[in-house]
Image (cartoon, rainbow, N blue to C red; front, side):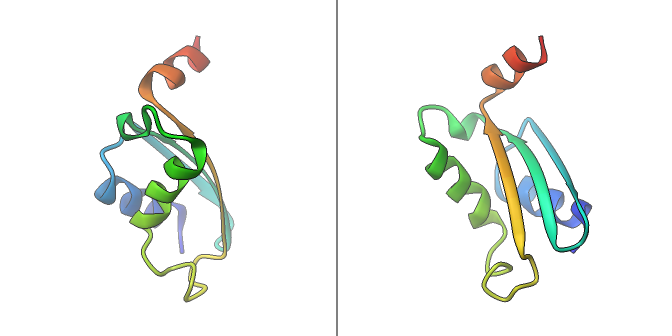
Length: 80
């Protein structure tokens, strides 16, 4: 997979304010900013993102994805 494919899948499956994906074809890093994360623990935020990727982990099309998830307010505070 390519980083842009993963970004599109995440954006198509979750209302996002911002998505960045980098990687080498098997191992990826992603920053995902969504209001859907508000009030949810990190594990639930990550599950929301993984759900947008369907069975790509089970089929080994996608091997590893390191996630950093933020609400828009958290993201804005980080950028200051």
